[in-house]
Length: 332
Ligand SMILES: [Zn+2]
Ligand SMILES: [Zn+2]
Image (cartoon, rainbow, N blue to C red; front, side, top):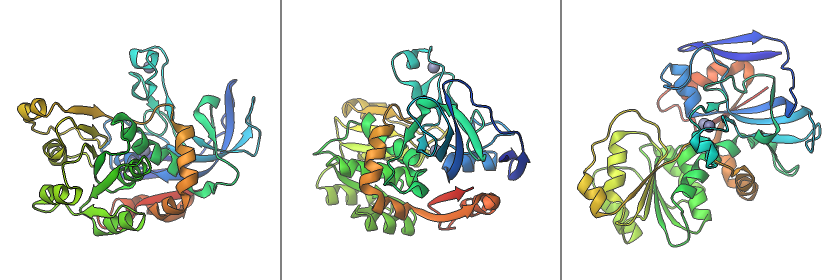
């Protein structure tokens, strides 16, 4: 079978290897659709702090079962929860395997799904209803990130939620928050992303220009009770803490290793909760239900599709500022 290797920064190779062998407790899968995530782009650029070369990228996967045991019969379409946790560390013991101390994410710390076939533990596989379009299946993993961020912030009806960043993760979080009954606003520098947010029902979509904080307060008629930072930049982290209401929650889902400068007195005076949000934990069935209910809207997030042979073209597009790509899906 063929698989894709990221072997060095900006270097992609196709490799011919033997089919994976299914071990007990696993299913052998035919990979059909693979979404490209921002973290795949970081790895492609050589900017990932977690991935090592060479690696088979890809963790947003929709597959068909070829060979299995238990309830999953051959032919069933599944989406993949791409986390392999140790099961014994403290976070694993308290049920938070998404931040396992020895976590291996497919396509990051271990080979992922840009391969024709892959064998994975049954517990990582979630069937997609036969009525749901599998060609958008990789979006389930994308949505799980924003879904988990909303869960961390305990978003509910009556909350005013501001999402910073209208990429696939941020827009997903905004749609989930809206579905939970919150009033939602979103910020982004890119007009095309703001237009898309408005088209899928997030009316309050703003550019973070001078005075954006005042505009958010005016449009929300108050401060947001929750801010979800989905950019990963020190400035937006600082802005999140400034704009959020007292007794509010700030969730960091964007990834950066640069330090923001915080005013500890502001944090204390507002009695804020600062919450990290990494991957997702035990929510794939809920996310699949959300995906099925909102698929017509969610389809708008997929701007480009390529056959896997053209993966290099897809990566170059995503690497181009202003290239217009939102979610790109590859197909074997
Ligand atoms: Zn991802
Ligand atoms: Zn662990």
